[in-house]
Image 1 (cartoon, rainbow, N blue to C red):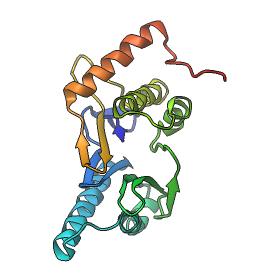
Image 2: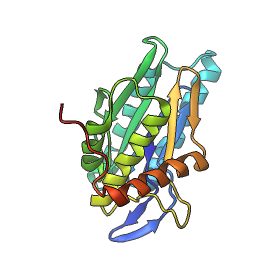
Image 3: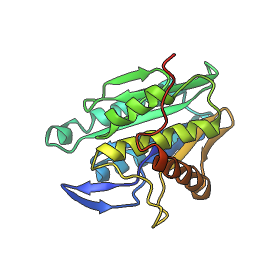
Image 4: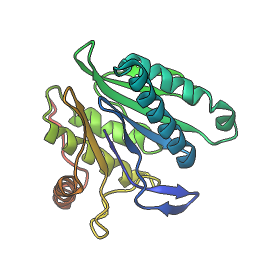
Amino acid sequence: MAGDRRATAGNVIAQRDVEKVFRADELSAVAIAGTAGIGLEIVRLFQVELEHYEKLEGRTLSLEGKANRLAALIRGNLGMAMQGLVVVPLLAGFDEERAGGRIFSYDAAGGRYEERDFHSIGSGSVFARGALKKLWRPGLSAEDAALVCVQALYDAADDDSATGGPDLIRRIFPVVAEVTADGFRRLPDEEVGAVAQSVVDGRFDSPGGPTAPLR
């Protein structure tokens, strides 16, 4: 899971280093798009509820349960969403019961939808999804998956003003995290920075990014 770092207020860049990808618990990650303040509050509440459940029950909530609980939190924000303060999350994690990864997307009313293979949210999602559709393939290594994510974010930033690309001058890079059976891991800035530098270097020769084979 990866997210850019830009927050906007109308046509103005409000913050260049906001974080949109978070550890939900040891086996799941959550990202937000939409109204940043409310989104961050929902994520904090979600994290606390998962931690509270684990302390009470002595085990983590199932991924299905996490997806349902997040849907309820988003549904609780419906009144604010109707006033324009919309928050849309993305949840991904390792499902111990199925021994594999799963992805869940949501709408502003708390509707929950399970996605296949990959997904994107936010104002630049249509451009990111186009890149993911061409670059994703089964069996990607963790390193290649991170590269695909950064390529997709670059494409989103290329066409969407509310999405920020890698800032090599300020050393502000996307937040990239991976979740496996071994747990949640956020990639260090140095590691993401190296990936971002390779993406930017490649765009000098191919501004549109890597091409997918026709067959």
